Length: 265
Image 1: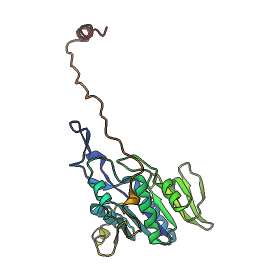
Image 2: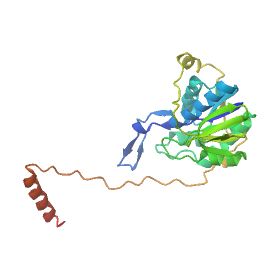
Image 3: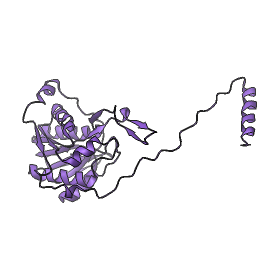
Image 4: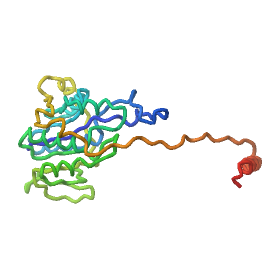
């Protein structure tokens, strides 16, 4: 069984700041990480490979810096990784100082083309959503582009005597026909950490295949966004409150006086 896991490099939300003067996200000190939700998809793929055999390939789209998450996926256990990069649009999106990343329709085209380029893919697994943009519509769009069925809210996959089975969040299990696109959501099984022996080996030659849109038969014109992202609109900055001292009775009198002065009461 050949399994492709879509992994994404995202900004760590804990390191993202907001610049009120520029009214945009300040990404200068933001760290980039492997999307946490995608680790659950990778874990499900690795467990299925361990039980039924096959090959797990991680697929990443981004600039040259996204090679870090491609290598991390290999360190965690993927057999190899594919990084689609080299487009001026990809580079511009990766260097943007906001969350206005590559358009969803372009991402879908790139992933679908990469799956076709790999050939013989039985399953494409994705995480529930991106940590920075909060969206989770990749799987349905990708399934439509590939002409495959899609399964949502899957916790785990297993190879049974009757074929492949998917367990859902409500505990129900059902047969899963392949090829298919599957959304893996967080469940009781935590994703594994990179194995120490694989961390150094993940940087060996031949484990990450670099592809460009041209390699996949796509042109710059085909990656034009089908939607225009909106800007960041901030509300008014909060005014700091005033601390009122004294006893409870004195504080009540002071607060009432301030409210009368502002004609609030």
